[in-house]
Length: 257
Image (cartoon, rainbow, N blue to C red; front, side, top):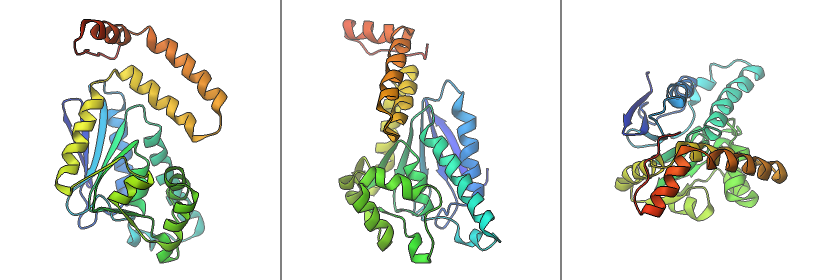
């Protein structure tokens, strides 16, 4: 891997974007993120994922220089679709993915972060979609995900002005979960990933699957799927262990069975 390195700490896979100076999001970096997902998807030892950037930024945007190498409308559309496919894979992934954001998550960098399930940010981080500043529009589903988090009006303001918001504002607006001082955000993100990794892999997978139904208005199918998962999870060995541990007032040991 040229731009993404990952390691395992207990049951957490930690990926680090390493593309100085701004960790710009290129097609190759997106492909390496896809390869990371493939590598850990069926590894039963990995129960949660964490992605962050090395250096000053999480990712300060897409690789603009790469745009100059695309020759026609079809090429730009396919570039966008490749990013959309990988970020949709992240959002629908069977294991939770946490983005630890410091410095800046702009343009494609924010679109990458919005593909994650949870976002922890530094309070001074800058988050935004400044594509209109370049006469462009978001290409990796940013125009569709941002309104889901901050609402239509705030999304319109962020997109049309190209102005970023701070990490503190991102929490207020619903774009991020929690904000911390910059020197704490990675460790706080890692602690969260570790905490989630302690849960039953079966119930975590079921929960992430059920959350996908909230992306649509298909409430009836969502609750039907919830009932199916409720039955399947409830008869698992992990569920039995969780109930017994609760009764015995001890910490459960889940094995994904």
